[in-house]
Image (tube, rainbow over all chains, first blue to last red; front, side):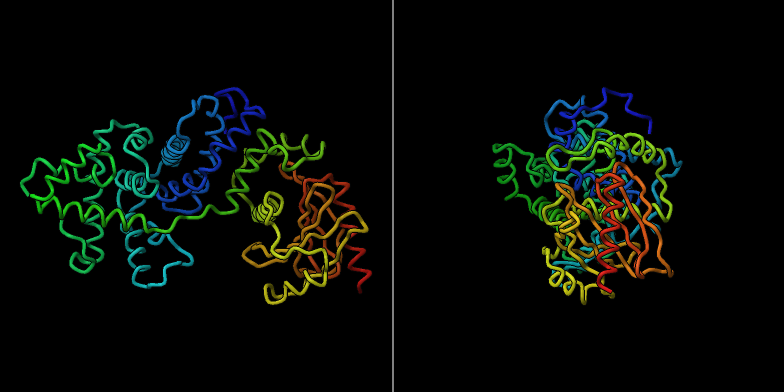
Length: 186
Length: 248
């Protein structure tokens, strides 16, 4: 940690605002970090450090939507962590195939299995493809907010998202067999 | 599939990014374009599949780590927990120490889990799973939930009324947690059968503004966590020991 040198030390009021405005988005931050890192322990480290950074930069937060603002910090934290460790995205084989563990509320084993396949297909995609799909479909961000998180023009968000969907469809098709799961050809 | 009109709009339409006018145009064009109809169905199905993935719950330990970071930097939230003056003065020093070293040794991992358990108890109105000051209600509640019978005593006479109990996971093992109150503060007492024999004196450690006291008594390893002064923690441990001894 490099201290709180980037801004004034948060006072009690700032802290209360931070708790009210940013902390409720910890679920989103951790969820995004899970998909970025594909590792629960690293995701915890990323989410924790991102929260600390968010508190440090909070004086510069000018209102608006806190969730995209926080997710951008999560992503930058993850990028920094990766470059610090000198590692790149892990290859597919090592990636955790089942990020969604634990009790499944859905009764149907078939549906549960399909969800596992979807999760595995998503986890197998390169980070650049994965992140935009997660932001759009799982975090449900608008193009404008995705553009803010990824620091891209909206036009690039649109083209990258379209390509990402094609890649996921192909990956899923390979896993499930295109005819079986009823996904029409793209 | 030769369709310059609607092809580029499929994604934006699925994502709800088209204006009402654009949406109407798209829907009109779609009628004449089976290729784009298929693209639309595929995009919708893919979106539905991704949205059906269950969310990842935030681990309690992560919540506890972040909570402690916040406390170390700015102090506890107002109106919820009031730290004793002594604990508050220790927050800064210990908090910074903790931020400096992030790798957890085995012992400190256990302390982390105990602290996480304490924060669940202290920060939430649902911190106990069985809420009762009656030991004859709390003690039987643990039967079948954990594989040992913890000694349960109400310590109201000693200034620590029993609030109830819960089960936490410590080092991958289910452990009994008894929750007590001291004025506005809560005390979490986690205990399990001792791994070695003999008694040991309560030793108080400070961690991020919280006091942890560990000791061994009457065949149990006992760990208490609270935002109380070390003196209060020692008197709590003493009260627990006396109650256990009186029962034997």
